[in-house]
Image (cartoon, rainbow over all chains, first blue to last red):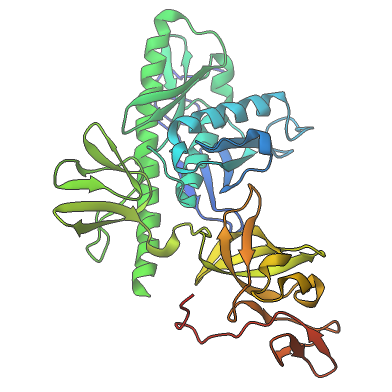
Amino acid sequence: MEIISPEGLRQDGRTPTCLRIIKCRLGLYDRPNGSAYIEMGNTKVLAAVYGPREVRSKNKQNLDECVIQCEMSRIAACGGERVRRARDKRTRALSHQIAGVFHAAIRKSKYPGSQIDIYVQVLQEDGGVMSACVNASTLALIHAGVELLDYVTSCTASINKQTAILDATNMEGQAGCEVTVSLLPNKGSIVSLDSSHTVHRDQFEAVMDLATAGCQQVYQELFSQVEAYLQDKHAIMSHR
Amino acid sequence: MKSGNGHIVCVPGQRICEAGNTHVGGEGTYTFNNYIYASLPGQVIVTQRGELNVVKVGLGQQGTVMPEAGSIVTCRVLNVSPNLATVSIICVGPHKLHTPVSGTIRKQNVRDHQIDTVEMYNCFRPDDIILAIVVSLGDLRHYELSTAGTELGVVTARCEDGHPLVPASWTTMKCKCRTERRKVAKVMPPGSHNV
Protein backbone atom coordinates (compact mmCIF):
# COMPACT_ATOMS: atom_id res chain seq x y z
CA MET A 1 0.00 0.00 0.00
CA GLU A 2 1.31 3.41 -0.91
CA ILE A 3 1.81 5.96 1.88
CA ILE A 4 1.26 8.85 -0.50
CA SER A 5 -1.22 8.32 -3.30
CA PRO A 6 -0.49 9.46 -6.87
CA GLU A 7 -2.71 12.50 -6.21
CA GLY A 8 -0.32 13.52 -3.43
CA LEU A 9 -2.64 12.72 -0.54
CA ARG A 10 -2.02 10.44 2.43
CA GLN A 11 -4.13 7.55 3.67
CA ASP A 12 -6.27 9.79 5.88
CA GLY A 13 -6.70 12.41 3.16
CA ARG A 14 -4.15 14.91 4.45
CA THR A 15 -1.56 16.66 2.34
CA PRO A 16 2.07 15.94 3.35
CA THR A 17 2.30 19.23 5.30
CA CYS A 18 -0.99 18.97 7.15
CA LEU A 19 -1.35 18.30 10.88
CA ARG A 20 -3.93 15.95 12.33
CA ILE A 21 -6.83 17.46 14.25
CA ILE A 22 -5.83 18.58 17.75
CA LYS A 23 -8.36 18.59 20.56
CA CYS A 24 -7.53 19.41 24.14
CA ARG A 25 -9.10 20.04 27.52
CA LEU A 26 -7.66 21.67 30.61
CA GLY A 27 -8.55 20.91 34.20
CA LEU A 28 -10.08 17.46 34.28
CA TYR A 29 -9.30 16.58 37.88
CA ASP A 30 -9.32 18.28 41.27
CA ARG A 31 -6.63 16.34 43.07
CA PRO A 32 -3.59 17.23 40.96
CA ASN A 33 -2.61 20.90 40.77
CA GLY A 34 -2.99 20.81 37.02
CA SER A 35 -4.28 18.33 34.46
CA ALA A 36 -4.85 18.23 30.73
CA TYR A 37 -5.96 15.90 27.96
CA ILE A 38 -4.84 16.10 24.36
CA GLU A 39 -5.84 14.29 21.23
CA MET A 40 -3.65 14.53 18.16
CA GLY A 41 -5.52 12.47 15.64
CA ASN A 42 -5.69 9.02 17.19
CA THR A 43 -2.94 9.63 19.73
CA LYS A 44 -4.58 10.39 23.06
CA VAL A 45 -2.70 11.40 26.17
CA LEU A 46 -3.59 12.47 29.71
CA ALA A 47 -1.20 14.53 31.83
CA ALA A 48 -1.32 15.52 35.49
CA VAL A 49 1.01 17.85 37.37
CA TYR A 50 1.57 17.73 41.11
CA GLY A 51 3.50 20.48 42.76
CA PRO A 52 5.45 22.51 43.47
CA ARG A 53 5.47 20.40 46.60
CA GLU A 54 7.95 19.20 49.19
CA VAL A 55 10.76 17.02 47.94
CA ARG A 56 10.12 13.39 48.82
CA SER A 57 13.69 12.15 49.04
CA LYS A 58 16.12 14.36 50.88
CA ASN A 59 19.22 13.59 48.84
CA LYS A 60 17.59 14.83 45.65
CA GLN A 61 16.72 18.17 47.15
CA ASN A 62 18.34 21.17 45.56
CA LEU A 63 18.10 24.40 47.54
CA ASP A 64 18.62 26.62 44.48
CA GLU A 65 16.25 25.03 42.01
CA CYS A 66 13.32 22.66 41.88
CA VAL A 67 13.47 19.00 40.98
CA ILE A 68 11.41 17.95 37.97
CA GLN A 69 10.27 14.36 37.71
CA CYS A 70 8.24 12.77 34.97
CA GLU A 71 6.61 9.39 34.88
CA MET A 72 5.00 8.04 31.75
CA SER A 73 2.84 4.96 31.52
CA ARG A 74 0.76 3.28 28.87
CA ILE A 75 -2.57 1.57 29.37
CA ALA A 76 -2.75 -2.07 28.32
CA ALA A 77 -4.83 -1.51 25.20
CA CYS A 78 -3.17 1.64 23.89
CA GLY A 79 -1.50 0.15 20.84
CA GLY A 80 -2.00 -2.69 18.42
CA GLU A 81 -0.35 -5.16 20.73
CA ARG A 82 -1.34 -5.65 24.34
CA VAL A 83 1.06 -3.81 26.64
CA ARG A 84 2.28 -6.19 29.34
CA ARG A 85 3.98 -3.65 31.57
CA ALA A 86 2.74 -0.09 31.89
CA ARG A 87 6.28 1.12 32.43
CA ASP A 88 9.17 -0.44 30.59
CA LYS A 89 12.59 0.67 29.40
CA ARG A 90 11.14 2.66 26.53
CA THR A 91 8.64 4.66 28.58
CA ARG A 92 11.28 5.28 31.22
CA ALA A 93 13.64 6.68 28.60
CA LEU A 94 10.84 8.83 27.17
CA SER A 95 9.89 10.15 30.61
CA HIS A 96 13.50 11.17 31.24
CA GLN A 97 13.43 12.96 27.92
CA ILE A 98 10.17 14.77 28.77
CA ALA A 99 11.58 15.83 32.15
CA GLY A 100 14.65 17.13 30.31
CA VAL A 101 12.49 19.18 27.96
CA PHE A 102 10.77 20.88 30.90
CA HIS A 103 14.07 21.62 32.59
CA ALA A 104 14.48 24.14 29.79
CA ALA A 105 11.02 25.65 30.13
CA ILE A 106 10.16 25.79 33.84
CA ARG A 107 11.57 28.72 35.81
CA LYS A 108 13.30 26.42 38.26
CA SER A 109 14.85 29.13 40.39
CA LYS A 110 11.33 30.27 41.38
CA TYR A 111 10.75 27.07 43.32
CA PRO A 112 13.87 26.37 45.37
CA GLY A 113 13.92 23.16 47.35
CA SER A 114 10.66 21.84 45.92
CA GLN A 115 9.62 19.25 43.42
CA ILE A 116 7.31 19.21 40.40
CA ASP A 117 5.95 15.85 39.27
CA ILE A 118 4.51 15.26 35.83
CA TYR A 119 2.49 12.09 35.27
CA VAL A 120 1.64 11.22 31.69
CA GLN A 121 -0.60 8.38 30.64
CA VAL A 122 -0.90 7.27 27.03
CA LEU A 123 -4.45 6.16 26.31
CA GLN A 124 -4.00 5.44 22.64
CA GLU A 125 -0.90 5.62 20.49
CA ASP A 126 -0.78 6.30 16.79
CA GLY A 127 2.51 7.99 16.05
CA GLY A 128 3.95 11.06 17.75
CA VAL A 129 3.49 9.76 21.32
CA MET A 130 6.40 11.75 22.68
CA SER A 131 5.16 15.00 21.13
CA ALA A 132 1.62 14.45 22.39
CA CYS A 133 3.06 13.83 25.88
CA VAL A 134 5.09 17.05 25.75
CA ASN A 135 2.10 19.07 24.55
CA ALA A 136 -0.18 17.57 27.21
CA SER A 137 2.38 18.25 29.94
CA THR A 138 2.72 21.87 28.81
CA LEU A 139 -1.02 22.35 29.10
CA ALA A 140 -1.09 20.67 32.51
CA LEU A 141 1.76 22.87 33.75
CA ILE A 142 -0.05 25.98 32.53
CA HIS A 143 -3.20 24.80 34.29
CA ALA A 144 -1.20 24.17 37.47
CA GLY A 145 0.08 27.77 37.38
CA VAL A 146 3.74 26.78 37.26
CA GLU A 147 5.90 29.63 35.99
CA LEU A 148 7.12 28.84 32.50
CA LEU A 149 9.52 30.69 30.24
CA ASP A 150 7.41 29.73 27.28
CA TYR A 151 5.11 27.05 25.95
CA VAL A 152 6.82 23.88 24.83
CA THR A 153 5.23 22.50 21.71
CA SER A 154 6.33 19.37 19.97
CA CYS A 155 5.68 17.80 16.60
CA THR A 156 6.97 14.92 14.52
CA ALA A 157 7.91 14.65 10.88
CA SER A 158 8.89 11.72 8.74
CA ILE A 159 10.11 11.06 5.25
CA ASN A 160 8.66 8.89 2.56
CA LYS A 161 10.45 8.52 -0.78
CA GLN A 162 11.96 12.00 -0.84
CA THR A 163 8.76 13.65 0.46
CA ALA A 164 8.81 15.00 3.98
CA ILE A 165 5.52 14.35 5.79
CA LEU A 166 4.30 16.15 8.90
CA ASP A 167 2.77 14.50 11.99
CA ALA A 168 3.23 10.90 10.86
CA THR A 169 0.83 8.22 12.04
CA ASN A 170 2.09 4.86 13.26
CA MET A 171 1.93 3.33 9.79
CA GLU A 172 3.65 6.25 8.11
CA GLY A 173 6.30 6.36 10.82
CA GLN A 174 7.21 2.71 10.41
CA ALA A 175 8.08 3.14 6.74
CA GLY A 176 10.58 5.93 7.37
CA CYS A 177 12.01 7.54 10.45
CA GLU A 178 10.21 9.64 13.03
CA VAL A 179 11.91 12.91 13.92
CA THR A 180 10.48 14.59 17.03
CA VAL A 181 11.21 18.27 17.58
CA SER A 182 10.29 20.20 20.74
CA LEU A 183 10.34 23.96 20.49
CA LEU A 184 9.90 27.10 22.57
CA PRO A 185 7.71 28.80 19.96
CA ASN A 186 8.06 32.43 21.09
CA LYS A 187 11.83 32.13 21.39
CA GLY A 188 12.20 29.89 18.36
CA SER A 189 14.70 27.69 20.16
CA ILE A 190 14.71 23.92 19.90
CA VAL A 191 14.88 22.15 23.27
CA SER A 192 14.83 18.56 22.14
CA LEU A 193 15.45 16.73 18.90
CA ASP A 194 15.12 13.01 18.54
CA SER A 195 15.03 10.58 15.69
CA SER A 196 13.77 7.01 15.85
CA HIS A 197 15.89 5.81 12.93
CA THR A 198 18.74 7.11 10.83
CA VAL A 199 17.94 9.91 8.42
CA HIS A 200 19.99 10.76 5.39
CA ARG A 201 21.89 13.99 5.83
CA ASP A 202 20.48 15.51 2.64
CA GLN A 203 16.94 14.90 3.80
CA PHE A 204 17.44 15.87 7.42
CA GLU A 205 17.20 19.63 6.87
CA ALA A 206 13.84 19.32 5.10
CA VAL A 207 12.39 17.04 7.78
CA MET A 208 13.51 19.28 10.59
CA ASP A 209 12.22 22.44 8.97
CA LEU A 210 8.86 20.79 8.46
CA ALA A 211 8.71 19.60 12.09
CA THR A 212 9.65 23.09 13.33
CA ALA A 213 6.92 24.64 11.22
CA GLY A 214 4.58 21.99 12.64
CA CYS A 215 5.49 23.05 16.18
CA GLN A 216 4.43 26.61 15.38
CA GLN A 217 1.12 25.33 14.06
CA VAL A 218 0.64 23.26 17.22
CA TYR A 219 1.40 26.39 19.22
CA GLN A 220 -1.32 28.36 17.44
CA GLU A 221 -3.73 25.54 18.15
CA LEU A 222 -2.85 25.22 21.85
CA PHE A 223 -2.77 29.00 22.23
CA SER A 224 -6.34 29.41 21.02
CA GLN A 225 -7.55 26.58 23.27
CA VAL A 226 -5.84 28.02 26.37
CA GLU A 227 -7.18 31.45 25.45
CA ALA A 228 -10.72 30.08 25.35
CA TYR A 229 -10.17 28.29 28.67
CA LEU A 230 -8.81 31.44 30.34
CA GLN A 231 -11.64 33.60 29.10
CA ASP A 232 -14.19 31.09 30.36
CA LYS A 233 -12.51 31.07 33.72
CA HIS A 234 -12.11 34.81 33.74
CA ALA A 235 -15.77 35.32 32.92
CA ILE A 236 -16.71 33.11 35.86
CA MET A 237 -14.31 34.92 38.18
CA SER A 238 -15.46 38.39 37.28
CA HIS A 239 -19.09 37.45 37.82
CA ARG A 240 -18.47 36.75 41.50
CA MET B 1 -5.70 39.32 24.06
CA LYS B 2 -8.76 41.03 25.48
CA SER B 3 -11.43 39.38 27.58
CA GLY B 4 -15.03 40.56 27.73
CA ASN B 5 -14.66 43.12 30.50
CA GLY B 6 -11.63 44.95 29.10
CA HIS B 7 -8.90 43.14 31.06
CA ILE B 8 -5.87 41.91 29.17
CA VAL B 9 -5.40 38.16 29.49
CA CYS B 10 -2.09 36.51 28.60
CA VAL B 11 -0.40 33.12 28.57
CA PRO B 12 3.21 32.06 29.38
CA GLY B 13 5.78 33.19 26.83
CA GLN B 14 3.72 36.08 25.57
CA ARG B 15 5.50 39.41 25.23
CA ILE B 16 3.72 42.08 27.27
CA CYS B 17 5.72 45.28 26.80
CA GLU B 18 9.17 46.80 26.68
CA ALA B 19 11.13 46.91 29.90
CA GLY B 20 12.72 50.24 30.64
CA ASN B 21 12.76 53.17 33.00
CA THR B 22 9.00 53.31 33.26
CA HIS B 23 7.99 49.65 33.31
CA VAL B 24 9.41 46.79 35.38
CA GLY B 25 8.28 43.20 35.66
CA GLY B 26 6.62 41.94 38.85
CA GLU B 27 5.19 38.58 39.86
CA GLY B 28 4.38 36.18 37.05
CA THR B 29 6.69 37.88 34.55
CA TYR B 30 10.32 37.77 33.50
CA THR B 31 12.54 40.09 31.54
CA PHE B 32 14.39 38.80 28.51
CA ASN B 33 16.19 40.86 25.87
CA ASN B 34 14.74 44.09 27.29
CA TYR B 35 11.14 42.94 27.02
CA ILE B 36 8.75 41.81 29.74
CA TYR B 37 7.26 38.37 29.09
CA ALA B 38 4.49 36.58 30.98
CA SER B 39 5.39 33.36 32.77
CA LEU B 40 1.91 32.60 34.16
CA PRO B 41 -1.51 32.54 32.56
CA GLY B 42 -3.91 35.21 33.73
CA GLN B 43 -4.76 38.85 33.81
CA VAL B 44 -2.22 41.64 33.30
CA ILE B 45 -2.28 44.06 36.23
CA VAL B 46 -0.27 47.28 36.15
CA THR B 47 0.29 49.01 39.48
CA GLN B 48 2.08 52.28 40.02
CA ARG B 49 4.90 52.46 42.54
CA GLY B 50 6.37 55.93 42.54
CA GLU B 51 7.49 56.65 39.01
CA LEU B 52 7.60 52.98 38.08
CA ASN B 53 4.82 50.90 36.62
CA VAL B 54 4.98 47.34 37.93
CA VAL B 55 3.56 44.80 35.51
CA LYS B 56 2.16 41.68 37.16
CA VAL B 57 0.36 38.63 35.82
CA GLY B 58 -1.89 36.41 37.87
CA LEU B 59 -5.32 34.94 38.40
CA GLY B 60 -6.13 36.94 41.52
CA GLN B 61 -6.32 34.83 44.68
CA GLN B 62 -5.37 31.54 43.09
CA GLY B 63 -1.66 31.98 43.84
CA THR B 64 0.09 29.52 46.09
CA VAL B 65 0.09 30.45 49.80
CA MET B 66 2.67 28.91 52.07
CA PRO B 67 3.01 29.38 55.83
CA GLU B 68 5.54 32.00 56.92
CA ALA B 69 7.02 32.76 60.31
CA GLY B 70 4.37 34.66 62.26
CA SER B 71 1.34 33.59 60.28
CA ILE B 72 -1.63 32.02 62.05
CA VAL B 73 -2.46 28.58 60.75
CA THR B 74 -5.29 26.11 61.21
CA CYS B 75 -4.14 22.53 61.67
CA ARG B 76 -5.44 19.05 62.30
CA VAL B 77 -3.60 17.03 64.96
CA LEU B 78 -2.25 13.78 63.54
CA ASN B 79 -0.20 12.28 66.32
CA VAL B 80 0.55 13.12 69.95
CA SER B 81 3.67 11.89 71.72
CA PRO B 82 4.97 12.87 75.20
CA ASN B 83 7.31 15.50 73.74
CA LEU B 84 5.63 16.80 70.63
CA ALA B 85 2.48 16.78 68.56
CA THR B 86 2.54 16.30 64.80
CA VAL B 87 -0.07 18.28 62.89
CA SER B 88 -0.99 18.88 59.28
CA ILE B 89 -1.47 22.51 58.36
CA ILE B 90 -4.62 22.95 56.31
CA CYS B 91 -5.15 26.73 56.24
CA VAL B 92 -2.92 29.79 56.40
CA GLY B 93 -4.96 32.72 57.66
CA PRO B 94 -8.07 32.72 55.48
CA HIS B 95 -6.45 30.78 52.60
CA LYS B 96 -6.82 27.05 52.22
CA LEU B 97 -3.69 25.18 51.18
CA HIS B 98 -3.94 23.01 48.10
CA THR B 99 -1.91 20.27 49.75
CA PRO B 100 -1.55 20.13 53.54
CA VAL B 101 1.97 20.52 54.92
CA SER B 102 3.18 19.05 58.16
CA GLY B 103 4.18 20.87 61.33
CA THR B 104 5.20 20.06 64.89
CA ILE B 105 4.36 21.58 68.26
CA ARG B 106 6.98 20.95 70.92
CA LYS B 107 6.09 20.54 74.57
CA GLN B 108 7.73 23.85 75.49
CA ASN B 109 5.70 25.74 72.87
CA VAL B 110 2.26 24.67 74.06
CA ARG B 111 1.64 27.48 76.55
CA ASP B 112 3.35 30.50 78.09
CA HIS B 113 3.22 29.57 81.78
CA GLN B 114 4.25 26.43 83.68
CA ILE B 115 6.11 25.08 80.69
CA ASP B 116 7.67 22.27 82.73
CA THR B 117 4.37 20.73 83.77
CA VAL B 118 2.85 20.46 80.30
CA GLU B 119 1.52 17.04 79.50
CA MET B 120 0.93 16.75 75.77
CA TYR B 121 -1.90 14.27 76.08
CA ASN B 122 -3.84 16.69 78.30
CA CYS B 123 -3.50 19.41 75.69
CA PHE B 124 -4.15 17.80 72.31
CA ARG B 125 -5.66 14.61 70.98
CA PRO B 126 -5.49 13.29 67.43
CA ASP B 127 -8.10 14.77 65.07
CA ASP B 128 -8.51 18.03 67.00
CA ILE B 129 -8.65 21.20 64.96
CA ILE B 130 -6.28 23.78 66.41
CA LEU B 131 -5.10 27.32 65.78
CA ALA B 132 -1.36 27.90 66.03
CA ILE B 133 1.27 30.45 65.07
CA VAL B 134 4.31 29.59 62.96
CA VAL B 135 7.47 30.11 65.01
CA SER B 136 9.98 29.20 62.33
CA LEU B 137 10.24 27.25 59.14
CA GLY B 138 11.82 24.46 61.18
CA ASP B 139 13.72 21.66 59.55
CA LEU B 140 13.20 20.44 55.99
CA ARG B 141 10.04 18.51 56.72
CA HIS B 142 8.15 20.25 59.49
CA TYR B 143 7.13 23.78 60.34
CA GLU B 144 7.76 24.70 63.97
CA LEU B 145 4.47 25.83 65.54
CA SER B 146 3.44 27.31 68.86
CA THR B 147 0.09 27.56 70.67
CA ALA B 148 1.33 29.89 73.43
CA GLY B 149 -1.29 32.61 73.79
CA THR B 150 -4.91 32.82 74.82
CA GLU B 151 -6.38 32.82 71.34
CA LEU B 152 -4.36 29.81 70.19
CA GLY B 153 -5.09 26.17 70.92
CA VAL B 154 -7.87 23.68 70.36
CA VAL B 155 -10.88 25.10 68.55
CA THR B 156 -13.03 22.08 67.78
CA ALA B 157 -12.68 18.60 69.15
CA ARG B 158 -14.67 15.45 69.76
CA CYS B 159 -14.70 13.28 72.88
CA GLU B 160 -13.75 9.60 72.89
CA ASP B 161 -17.31 8.63 71.98
CA GLY B 162 -17.41 11.15 69.14
CA HIS B 163 -19.60 13.82 70.70
CA PRO B 164 -18.60 17.42 69.94
CA LEU B 165 -16.87 19.13 72.85
CA VAL B 166 -17.55 22.69 74.01
CA PRO B 167 -15.05 24.79 75.94
CA ALA B 168 -15.67 24.79 79.67
CA SER B 169 -12.51 26.52 80.94
CA TRP B 170 -8.95 27.26 79.79
CA THR B 171 -7.98 23.64 80.27
CA THR B 172 -11.17 21.64 79.95
CA MET B 173 -13.84 20.93 77.36
CA LYS B 174 -17.19 19.29 77.99
CA CYS B 175 -19.65 17.20 76.07
CA LYS B 176 -22.87 15.60 77.23
CA CYS B 177 -21.09 12.57 78.70
CA ARG B 178 -17.72 13.65 80.06
CA THR B 179 -15.12 16.36 80.60
CA GLU B 180 -11.82 16.18 78.73
CA ARG B 181 -8.64 18.19 79.15
CA ARG B 182 -7.37 20.35 76.29
CA LYS B 183 -5.36 23.55 75.72
CA VAL B 184 -8.45 25.55 74.78
CA ALA B 185 -8.31 28.57 72.49
CA LYS B 186 -10.31 31.67 73.26
CA VAL B 187 -11.74 32.09 69.79
CA MET B 188 -11.93 35.71 68.71
CA PRO B 189 -14.57 36.87 66.26
CA PRO B 190 -13.06 37.02 62.76
CA GLY B 191 -11.33 40.28 61.98
CA SER B 192 -10.18 41.02 65.51
CA HIS B 193 -6.95 38.96 65.28
CA ASN B 194 -4.06 41.14 66.21
CA VAL B 195 -1.35 38.75 67.34
